[in-house]
Length: 313
Ligand code: SER
Image (cartoon, rainbow, N blue to C red; front, side, top):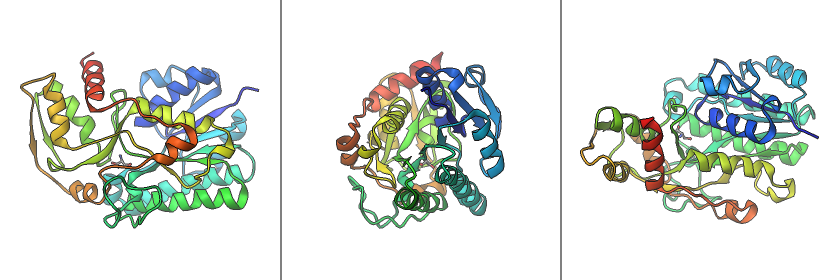
């Protein structure tokens, strides 16, 4: 039987590409996009769309019942930099939207949930290099606290109520179709836009700020493959470490210079430096590789080539 999928937060950086990919896979009519605002043309034109506030339980329930939804991908969230400015709003959005979806699954109104976690679950006391799946976490940002709590609740709903919830800890995501908003890793997207537009970029992180990153195609592939493996293979019900590449602003500038030799970068670290400094610089994702066959495809230079080529168009 064909399943029906709801994406909440479909107009964001991940949601847009996830929706388009799921529509290719499962048929446009079976993949319902929803967000608090309308999105770009490729998303709006490619299938059904509902305006939906993820914090409104009965609105979410109505959409689930109306379309007979089987699976939800909950991509609505306030990211790290914005969340530091609006702590209570971030907590409200990030936690309540998760509870709504977990409760719908607990009540068997849907059968499967994807919820994204982040490298932000780690904190200043976490080992920075090759950060293991299970280690000291102690996140120091509002966003990280919400993701860490969310992970605990996902595992709790799985263990206590049998909810089939699946999650990965995304690194910084690099993409050209939809701009990210309010994140600390966003510099790694902005830099490509500015390189093409102005030939220079003022970076809000220091030159040596090494962070885990991933090209969006890899992130979408990881997400969909985790959702497709048999439930018994998904041993981790909090969230899986996931790794693509790892670089700092100086490395990405060097990669851009191979295509645009005159490109220049300058540094003016702001409040986001402290957020970045609290996160790992690389991630050990052995469990994702062993339990559901994860393998990244894009390194920094391949990402740069894709980004510049597509943004030029
Ligand atoms: N990329 C996100 C951010 O920077 C982390 O998950 O907020």
